[in-house]
Figure (cartoon, rainbow, N blue to C red):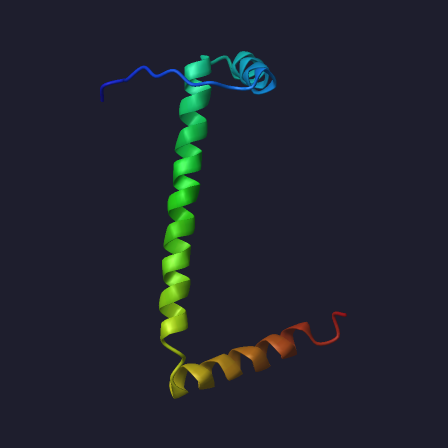
Length: 85
């Protein structure tokens, strides 16, 4: 994959933290930025997917079979934790 150079502006304190982290990790500053951006993008995409799943669940309330199963799960959970408090 081709690399593209870019310039960014940072607060001095953030730049210094990146410098320290790069030294500790024994990687380049560029690598620290790449790792940070990869994590940020993955977290963002995960949140987007989570939001879509929640929206889909909101749109379709549980049917009778699902409500019955939920009641069974709650009963089982109560029996499991009974007396733990």
